[in-house]
Image (cartoon, rainbow, N blue to C red; front, side):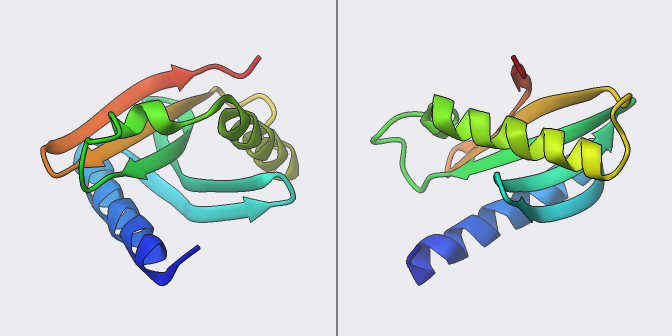
Length: 117
């Protein structure tokens, strides 16, 4: 990953974290890594443990950033979340997957953006 892309990612995650906190999310961890991949933000909200993917784009030329999450990426996030739940002995905790899309026009939070199958 280029330095520019990494900086953009950090900037997007910082902004998402701030907005999520203002909306009542309790941030537990950022940039959680395990053998299956990375989860940008892990938080608690409304009785759920929430695994959050952040997508930031400077332009919408190539479409909404929320649509850039591939099925492969979703599988990696799901496997990473399952690993997190198991390793933290939280198997009975209600969990969901949210996505935060950031563009110059604003921020969009999608709760339950996808399901673990």
